[in-house]
Structure formats: C-alpha cells, structure tokens
Length: 497
Figure 1: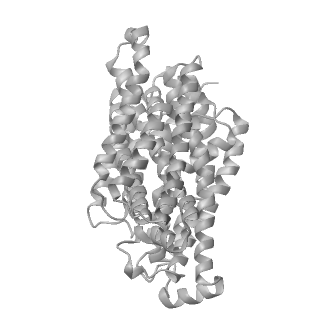
Figure 2: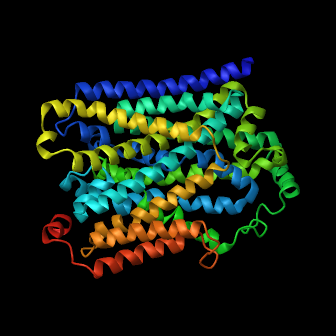
Figure 3: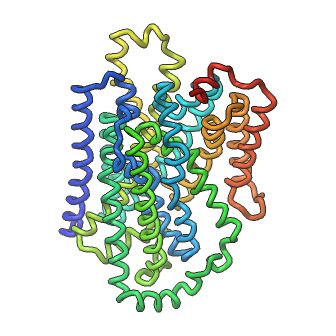
C-alpha cells in the first residue's frame, strides 16, 4: 500500500470512527436518561426534540444520497446541463415537505402518539390491511434504496483506495449499522448534522479542483465545447425529451411528500420556530449542494476522458484519485460516504420501526404483555437486533453490485411515492379519505408503476412516475367515494378543534 493510500484511508477511518463514537455516546445517554415517553419514542423519533438546524440537516442528509454525489454527477457529465436542470427541481423540496407536512403532521402525531408514517396510517384508516401493505412496501423499497447507497459508497472506496470493493462495503457498512442500531433516531439526526456540513465542504472541494485543473472557467468552457458540444442542450443531444425532463417535477419535486423517510421528519421537531428555521436552512443548503455537485459533473469531461471509465459511476472517484492530495481526498470521500451513511441510517431505522413498531408491537404482542416489565426490558435489544439484521441483509445483497446506482435509487423512490403519496396527503387534508381508498391507491399505484416500468409504454414521453401517480390518486379518490366515510371518532381526532 502506498503512502497516498495510507493517509487517505486514515482520514476516512477517523471520520467513520467519529460517527461510531457519537452513536455510542448517544446510546449511553439514552440508556441513562430515557424520557417519560419510553424507549420506542426515544429510539424511533428521538423524543421529538429536533431544533431548526438539526431538522434541516437531517432532511438534507436523508434526501441527498450516493446518487447525488456519485451517480448524479456522472450522468450530468454524459447528459450536460439538462441533468442540472433536472437536479435543481429538488431545491424547493425542504420547503414543500416542511410547509405542507410539517406542522399538521407534528400536531397529529402528538395527538395519536405516532412515531412512524405507518403509525399515522394506522390511526387514520383503522385498517390492518393498510398497515400490512404499507409496511411491506416500505421495507422492500427501503432495502432497494439502501442497497444502492451501499454500492455507491463501496465503489467510491474501492476506486479511491485501491482496496477490494468488499472491504469498503464491510467497513462503512458495519459502522453505519452499529451506530444506527445502537443509538437510534437521535444518533441518526446528530450524525446527519455533521454529515450535512461535510457534504457542503466536499462539494466545494470538488468544484474547485475541477476548475483549477482545467485552467480556469474560460479554458474549461472552451474544452467542453470540444469534448461535449451538446452539454448546454436541454435535450442532451436529443437523448432526453422535454416531457420526460419536466415529469421529474413529480418524481423529485412534489412526489417527495410521499417518501416516508422525509415525511417522518415532520414528527420529530420541537416547536414551530424550529420548523420555520429548518425551511430556510434546508432550501438554501439543498439548492447549493444540487447545483455544485451536478455542475461539477458537467464540467468534469474537461479534465477526464469519459471513454476510459468503466461507467459514469466511476467519474467522481477518478477525479479524486487523480487530482487531490491524500488529506483533501480523504476529506472529500467523507462527503459521499456521509451522504450514504445518512441515507442508509434513516432508511434503516424506519425499516426497523415498520417491523417492530408497526407490525410486531401492534399485531403480534398483546396490550397486556406490552406493559410487562420483563417485555419492556427486552424491547431495546429486540429493536437493535432487528435494525442490525436488516443492515446485514442489505450488505449481503450489495456484495454483487449492478451498475448505475442512480437508477436503482430513482426506481425505489418512485415506488415509495406511488405507495404513500395519496394516503399521506389525503389522510391529512381530506375528511372523506378512508381505508378503501388507501388500499386501492397503494395497490393501483405500485401495480401500475411496476407494470409501466417494465413495458415500453409511456404517457406522452413522460417518466413512469407520472401515469402511476395519476392512477394512485384517482384510485384513492374513487375508492374513498364508493365506500363508507371514516368513523366520526376518526374525523374528530384528525379534523376537530
């Protein structure tokens, strides 16, 4: 191993150990100072104690991922500014999520005692079928998303350090599983705050490196006109239709309201002041990250020959190893690893909650047993083991990786939106919404999404998410109108003064 690799790996391992230390520290504090709300509330929602900066950073860190730091810039190098336009659709996501879901979700979750999105659905629709179907969709699509994150991090580690892919996968995989399973939600949001700041620093380092190596902006743009003459074309040389591009306003724009991993953040903040601060911080930082990372991808062909790469996923790692000194490279690699770890930790804790809180406690354990001292003492261990098991399962799936992680991530994102968008939004804002509508929406949305995804049919050239979301929403409205309205008790709980 060269001295370059040794220094770089030392920086990365130090960063990973810092995250693990924080997780262990928070776990110790939780065990010695549990709140009156109990283990489940602390472990899965952090006692609803997030301030504005932490809420913004955990939302950013959860929403950004390996595809934002590795897959996205790689595609931007191939597609040009068209992919930047697409990425910038994500700028208002923090505002959309927190403004539409935040306050209403926080009030309802406190009234119902909900700590997960599925908890909310159970209280709103009073249906075992809704809980079972939504929990199954959540776990399956979360596993796919987590796999894409692990693959992205391991590819980056392999390319930069020269060590085997599996070593990188195991190294950060074990760290994120340990601090998430041991520390729970508080460990996730605390490390997310650190990782959000690291991502901002990493994006600045990357852009500055590319511009410097190209000899400045003038030299860079001159070179781009030669190697990628269509980089400024909104259709990427005819490979992207405008209708397909605009349909991403659904997939990565309003559709994010249906992502459980972001929606649950609306349950965990401390007060309205924190919510308003998070909207401002989140919008600014997401906009900055999306612009800088994807414009870096567009600029990259000026300093890297794309024909020499195995796939576009290797673009960013190649730039790091070729042009950055080991300390700076170590700091940069911490950024996408931070994105991977923050996304995986959020998905991991929610997948565990779906199994333990939404299924095991609600349907497999009697009310009487839940309050037994012996059972409550065992619950922390069962929760942590479940979280760890899910993480290990994803690592096993990721050992043999497919290419182009950005598409795996977008596929899973679309599936989650089709399943949860209508039940969450209509459940919060429409009195008539009921279990029949929710069930038909989930089945119709997921069924159409998978069918259209694997067929050649499109709706006027749009992305699969557009017709699938239309079917999901129409199914919800029709199902709700053709069946009995919700019970008066439910209406009073969700819409009463």
